[in-house]
Length: 262
Image 1 (cartoon, rainbow, N blue to C red):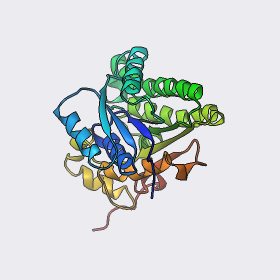
Image 2 (cartoon, rainbow, N blue to C red):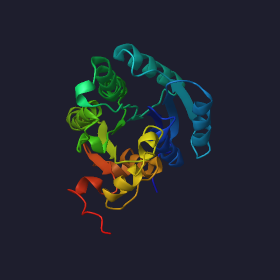
Image 3 (tube, rainbow, N blue to C red):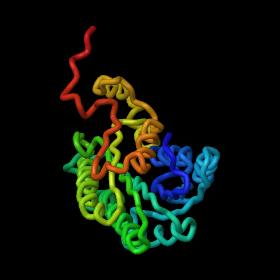
Image 4 (cartoon, one colour):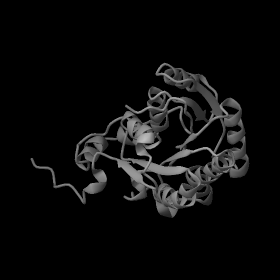
């Protein structure tokens, strides 16, 4: 059983989707959890309550990580430290995507994607790592990547680029931080149904098409990601460093499926 008792985790983007599923698994393991969200609203409070029911304490902190990176990261770090100053697990999960043809992507969309999906991860991890090194804390970092970091889609050029950067970040931060007692890994979901993917999946025939391209023929909810995340930040994974673990039903292993038979 995964034991996270005595640990405190900050999960960015933790009020919905994959982040919320991760937070619930951490709480089931006994960790106290800080959920980061964009706003303090009814949905965010309900997310906090659902995590609390599973074991550990849970509080909400808010910040817009798509804003100017230095101020956004600083505000979130200070808010998190005030709410739970013994944080030793950072799940850097917040992210966004917008479908667009490459020829139509504008500077604003690209820059916003890179701020939220890359820069905020990089500098929030730096902020916590500086603190952990100063305090002698054995910090654990988990970044949420995506199968799009390895398999591209025509209408996701900015998103794919950002997730490729996240995978590289996992490796380079491992090399930088492992000698300082901080463990860095990543988890890359395949296609799971979340509020961000629901609209696309509900298009005519889309879910069936994606199941055809997934060896286990499933398009599950985000709950499939939580247990792996909890494992990677636990003591059971103490010798796992710098890895991006794909939770994708085998999609990344398959060159292409056989044509469907009548």
